Amino acid sequence: MSRFQIKPTSASESLLLILSAKQLAWLDPRSPAQWHVVALDARVEMAAAISALTAIAVRHKTHGWPGVAPATLCLAPDITQHWLQTPPLQTQSLKELHAVSSARAKTLFGPPQAHGEWSISASWNASKAFLCTAISPTQVALMATIAKTQKELGLVCGLTLVLQKLEHLFPKNGWLAILLADRFYIFQRQQGVNLSIRTVRLPEQASLASCEGLVFQEWQREMIRTQNFTENLYWLNTRPSMVLEPSRQSQQPSCKSKLHTLAWTTSGQTPKPSSASSDHENILNCAWLTRELLGDRYAI
Image: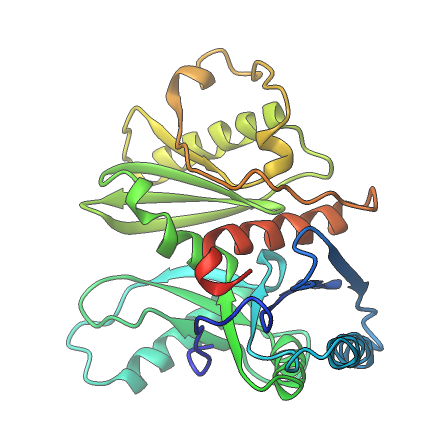
């Protein structure tokens, strides 16, 4: 992932793509509210992706646009695995950090379904725990295929993008929960450093109230596991469908008093799924969030 760089571009050239386990979505640069989604069948996902991107290139060329590059590809949460890696004592090299992280990925997630190894990207650090992201060989191959269709391709990951762009909202100490697409992440923080992370997938068609209740429940488990009984949990909701949903009282009577919502400014232009499928809604939520966080400087 570190081989790709995001660069500012002009509005007429920009293209935003979102890749999930089952779908590829893209935003038409000249129609900022129009999202396109194509299904990626496991047997033909390469062909589907190439076909979709070729169609974009033809459409742009027909309208006299200068190609489809540069582009930004965001990886949805359902194709990325995250964990915090503690570096070994007296680490001697980046190669050693790579080896330790690779071994940890196999321990946590097992071998990838496809032949090969997990591809790992991280904010490598020899002195403190750092966040790692693992991607399967199948997804790496698909990303490489997409990259070949673009003159330039910037690569971002949903969770790391949130951590980078909204860090100023996070508490220095205590607990932080981030809702992103179809899952949420609970972080234990100390002096602005993440000490632990827990990933929990949401049930199908989860409501805001049920999601808050589940976050509260998992937070209680994490406090017991870590023996860190900080009273409050800071809660960042990045799903527009849940932001706009009328809030209902959670099942736990003490939940509301302990969940502190972190407010952040958005454009208000939320995606409108054309399908009732939860997969469709999740990828559009991720697409909307990516556009919001990259902002006008990237012409998305």
